[in-house]
Length: 153
Image (cartoon, one colour):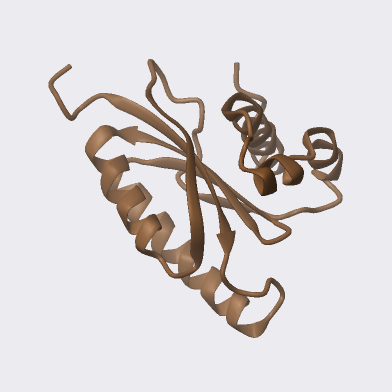
């Protein structure tokens, strides 16, 4: 592959700068979802974001330059603070297939979130990228199942 055209994955986490459940949060999230879907589809980026207890956790996959540009935007976004990358690497194939999905805790995914219980690791700044990735992949499976799409192999 030519330089700058390889498929990459980045996993990062950050703190939300707004109070979840507030009117500002709802408006901000609606704008985030609209703009992220549009940008990701245009740049052929796939992504899933977990927003839970004041944290964002996200995996993005796409072409290296598109991921760099997107992550630069994320870092500059005032809805985030304390942005920390846990993984940035080239990958052979996509494992995140949704253009953009924001996931919040629900009855349908509470068992998954309890099993991974990542808040302490995020707060302490020492999460394992593999655990974060598998959590996001399981959440993706739940989201795909809601849409009637069988689990990916």
